[in-house]
Each structure stands twice: as C-alpha cells, then as structure tokens.
Image (tube, rainbow, N blue to C red; front, side, top):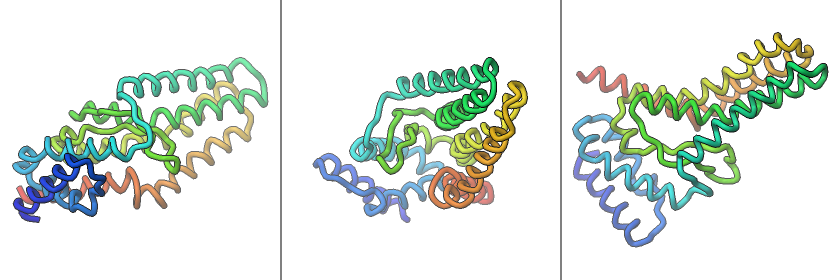
Amino acid sequence: MAESDIETVLTTCEQKLAAGESIKLGAEGFWRAVGRVKREPALTERYAERIGQIDRRTFEAWVLRSYPIRLGEALLWLGTIISLAVVAAGYYVDEPWNGLLLLAGTGGVMVTTHGLGHLIIGRLVGMRFTHWFIADLARPQPGVKTDYASYLRTPARRRAWMHASGALTTKAMPFLMLGAAAGMRAPLWSWIALIGIGVVTIITDIAISTKHSDWKKFSREMAIARQLEQSR
C-alpha cells in the first residue's frame, strides 16, 4: 500500500467517524494501512496518533462495556488476591474441601492474571492502556485495551511478547498450583484436575489461539520484527 493510499484510508475513516457513521475498519482498509505503517518506522511516527484515535473511537462504538483502566486493574489485582486467599484456605481444611478450594482459587487466578500479564509486560516495554472491557456476550472474559499509538511505537518483537504474556501466564497457573497441592496434601483427583486443566488450555491455544487470538498476534508481530531486521 502506497503512502497516498494510507492517507486516503485514514482520512475516510476520520470523516465517517466525524459524521457519526458506524464503520468496519477491515472493510475500510484500515488494518491493511496499519500493516504497512508497522513495517516502516518513518510511517509509524507520522501516523501513529491518527491511527490511535481512529482505533479508540471505533472501539468505544462497538465494545459492550468499558471502564477506566485503573478501575479494571484494581479489580484484577483484587480478584487475584481473593483467589490466592481461597487457595491458602485449603491449607486449613481437610479433604475434599482443600481440593475444591484449590481448584476454585486456581480458576480465579487464571482469569485475573491473563489481563495482568498483558498490563505488566506491556508497560515494561513502553505501552499505555486505556480501558478494561468486556467485548461482547460471546467473549465475556475481560480484556485490557491498548493505546494504539503507543502500541505502534513499541518495537514489533516487544509487541509480540506483550500478546504472549497473558496466554503464558494463564497456562502456567495450573502447573504452578501443583506446589500448593503438595503443600496442603490435596487429594489425587485435584492433582489430576490441575494437570488436565493445564493440558486442555495448551491444546485449546494450539487449536484456536494460533488462528484467532493472542498467539496469532504474537506470530504476526514476530514476522514483522523479522522483516524489519532483515531489511536493515
């Protein structure tokens, strides 16, 4: 895509949004323009803010629910603390309750630390975040919204690891909780359940996320990073 085409696409999106029209970014050629911008640092600097504004305005139009990122982050940390407290309570009860508490707490930690993984790694590599959100009823797991201008200015390899961070954190939790299972002498079935949950989430990632979610984005950004490195 030529630079003149990028300008045309962004201007069209801006005009339609200003007129109050609902737009689909893919149909407008927006993501093709973004892909081109990512591959040339000079274009990134020139267009990052405009792309970020368009992305944010369309996000606010389609998202089911969104809240300030500070509120979302506080709730994620609170949920993590409560979930860990549930696991800790398992040390003070007998079977089968310790196993049930272990699994309940693990489930909670898996949900809350996914978003926290993105936040922590994203901020470490220079990204900002704007919202905590629920996309729609089909995807009820809360997510964190990047400030897309800061996302574009972050090197591609670092963007890739930000995408991977949430998935890696979630997949690690069931296996890390095996240590808690040993400490509280949890029943065998809870060990089997933890391992099963961990294996199933890995298989799910391989089957789905590599095509539609975090790992697809990881692969995309790593490919861009390799292209940029080869062009130097």
